[in-house]
Image (cartoon, rainbow, N blue to C red):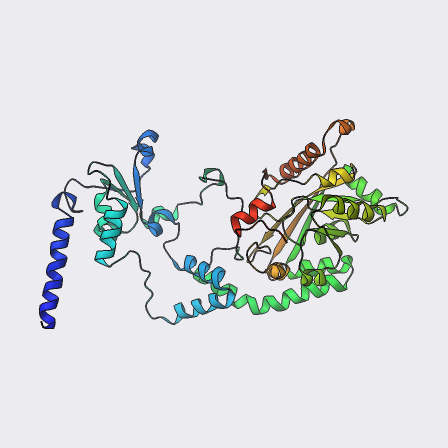
Length: 440
């Protein structure tokens, strides 16, 4: 059998396959199919109708704000393979003369058997499906041929789209991982590639300045390089801070209780109060300890041992910074507080912290944690908001349990930042992001 005969048989097979699998009643060009320009489906369908309706979306046209798939592939390349792999992927795209993003599976057999049989094989012919997308090419796709209505959004419509409000999320976004803090579009990725060589030098300079100079000199220089902090202090807290700074003969140190955004939290608190502090950490790499301009002590997660460590430091007149969450949280949420600090002392100062970065996150759950401070100082700009709050514990403190005190301080810090309180812990975070309990 020659090659021409094989080609004829192949085309005949495709023709018969289409004829048998897609009768005229299901053809996309059937007059019964209704196409509509994009409008709010809520105007045409009640919420009860939409609950029993299957929606078919073109991913880049109907779900994503950007029609370009480059940011999403770049994000996978960078987070999955690291910075160098991201650079290589960018270089490959740049060298190609023609850029084509594969929108749909073009293999007839694979597409038909998977989408039509496995996904919608059990559906009745009278089921109500609604399609949603932007490209007219979806009209030629067999999956959309099952839709009785198709909504098309123009490019002008998509330009008016806005990010989905946080309160509209199907479930709260509390934990996420990765280093990139921006959407890696083509131009933004190019800016990142250009910045990184200079950023390494700037980051090393920032570290040297912080370790070598007193805060009165280091803070203005750091602000000039793009790293800044803003302190918000109420009058009562100001008086307490002033008394803590001027009283050299005080018998005990001051305990600062804060939420946890990055490893640099204690350093920024130290800069805000313009005096050295001791950071209590559950896990920190030797490199982070080496680069830290303040003292650090490890907690063991053993209640009795940690109690003795904290009590000893405070009795030795050390000002101590403690993050009762036990782990960082990037989103506007405050994790559950450990009540250990309330057992040590009732005389503590709550501090609310928030960190904003422009390019890289300085935290990770599944990556190399020793690089956390390096990624933070690698940002072109970074700003910390430090709010020193009042201790709102009243005279009836004895009647409250330590857990109630911890919950009250958690709520106070969350309200100061406009965040939400959660009952989630370090274990919950690491189970979601890394598949382990975060035990170190």
